[in-house]
Image 1 (spheres, rainbow, N blue to C red):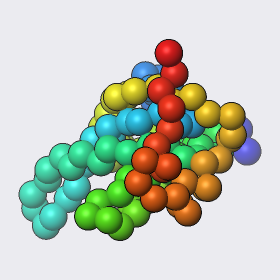
Image 2 (cartoon, one colour):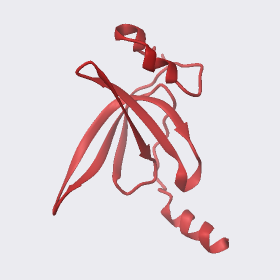
Image 3 (cartoon, rainbow, N blue to C red):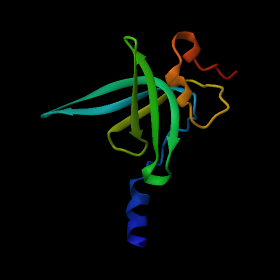
Image 4 (spheres, rainbow, N blue to C red):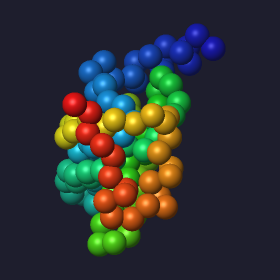
Length: 113
């Protein structure tokens, strides 16, 4: 069991970004297509965070061409290059799943001042 904890501790990023639920973030993801590698940006609102340690994940939601798109990113994955905070959100919930049912301006999160 101690060996497992040691491996997990080595995999945790020391410079993991600190962001919260409701924040709008820009995630840089490393995409491999055959032999080529490229970085893809995914910008949206963080609607959920779960797990701890190596298994910590966060869900980002955005609306693209009128269709809601959600992606779950492992926080400590080597494929997640960078998480840049665009704006802070003011929310009173731990999970923002209710945004899935909202359309247009109603789906926006207020900015924290």
